[in-house]
Length: 151
Image 1 (cartoon, helix red, strand yellow):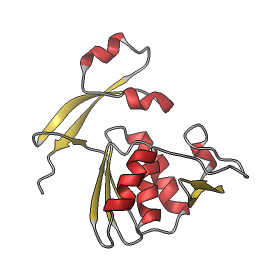
Image 2 (image 1 turned 135 degrees about the vertical axis):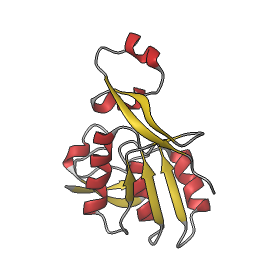
Image 3 (image 1 turned 120 degrees about the vertical axis):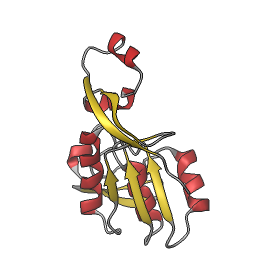
Image 4 (image 1 turned 180 degrees about the vertical axis):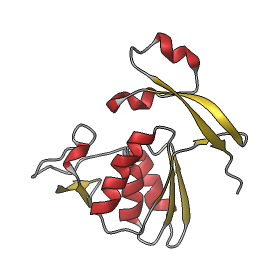
């Protein structure tokens, strides 16, 4: 594990995140989704409940927890294995526990929704669109629960 500056914040990063963020010492300030980060800087307040829908590997989730301690964070991703990366970030950093959810978020509550997961760092290509089978060589069809977020 190393501590690196991501958008000016000191974040502890496990080596398993190599390829997503730099995991070597003496990294200059790594810029990660800077426009999203600037919006979070302006919008996050103590004790807020935050939903990170499509959290992927959990880097933005970790930035939220580092930027504003005390948040109640619920992270969602349909690709189960990427949540393990987010959990690893949570484990080595000092923010409150995150609720990790392997669910789809959509326009209706429904069970058994088909979802095509793409392995490894290409997981961002994962989709409900069945045409993905014509675009990638490797995928897995899973069936997930889909929920709506009613505020």
